[in-house]
Image (cartoon, rainbow, N blue to C red):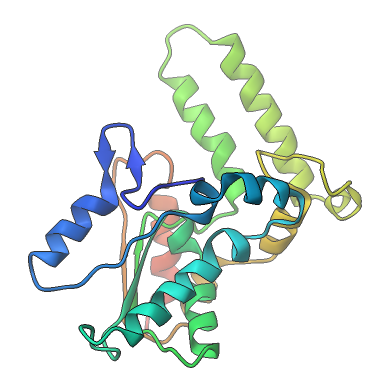
Length: 221
């Protein structure tokens, strides 16, 4: 989630760069790109009240799949999508959109993909961080209360009638309405292509609860 670079730089870590180098060393081509929310921050900020996950993530992923499929150095029958976090959650939408564009994926890799509503995870992550402190942090406590309140609004009926510029957990009603009723694990089971779902056991941002939801949805396939 968020305006990430092509390396998915998080502190000292460059997750996508490491993966790309490892795959390339085994003869697997990798296409990475800056998210448009990073590359075109000003333009995207102006569009923020109407922004959806299609604008933030899905559309560019589909365009990347199309670009790879047209590249003479790449086998168009062996193009895979790898998504981490939000990218993994949206893999079903990306796969469906690429199919509609007549550019099929061979399969998908989901890394630490949330299966639960994103607004639930934000409050949960803050609560975990707060639990690490022996002494309660008043600022963090207020952040948790605010996150819980926003999450309740996002999940409630009042979301439909909020002003377009009412910010909730850093996004606007259009963004959250686009995700309403979206069940990633259930939708992933509809992809009907090879899937690899991976989850770190010590990850506190996306947890084994999410991984178990994917396992349950995909069991018996």
